[in-house]
Amino acid sequence: MKLLEGKTALITGANRGIGRAIAKCFARNGGNVAFSDIAYDENSVSLEEELRNLGVNARGYASDAGSFTDSEQLVNSVVADFGALHILVNNAGITRDNLLLRLSESDWDLVVKVNLKSVFNLTKAVQRQMIKQRNGSVINMSSVVGIEGNFGQSNYSASKAGIIGFTKSVAMELGSRNIRVNAIAPGFIETEMTSRLPDEIRKEWIEDIPLKRGGTPDDVAKLALFLASDLSEYITGQVISVCGGLHT
Image (cartoon, rainbow, N blue to C red; front, top):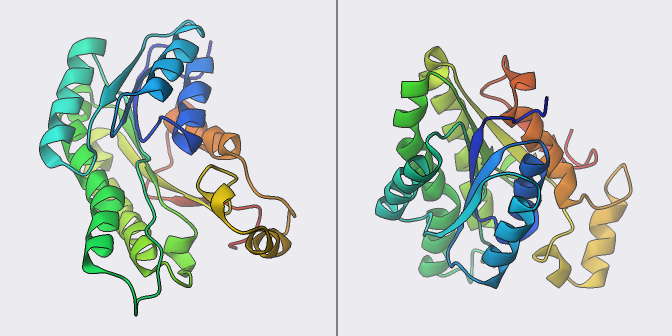
């Protein structure tokens, strides 16, 4: 039997990068996949097709994860369309990097809204369904930057650190209902976002990684699969780094 057979997952920010890799990993393991992004576009269409070709039910939705109303409507739509919701992956995220000296209020607010408030929005929206089922796994995408900080990323670091505190607190609240809440803290992952970095910066990062390579979205997806499946049924409130040893 496949690890996610009979389960339905909702993944935010899934049109590309880590979210897309998680969606495909879940589908390969028998999970039905609902996914969202700020827009339903050609990436959404192609992902839907890829997932359905793996033999699962799949559907993409346009939804602003930073909006409380959108998040409630999204969860209601997924439950109506799929009949259940067992797994939530809070993956939506952006960067607006700058030194604090030059960081605008709008860039602070936007990063906190998309990265952190979205986690509150979606987790609050799914808890009713998961409590009713007495079963669920919530996986929040933090970052090693949320653990250690990073030059020029005070807004991003704060949002990702906030996710860790939220994860640990909600794990305590929902554990008695058999709902697990964990966080993943990726390190340097080779995505569209990191590909925009100058080559010298990328080389410096990789030199500091004990495994001497950047991670891939699939490296993160494999951990998400473990946390989504019953293999991790006694694990909650944890923050697990996927960083090649960069953070120990």
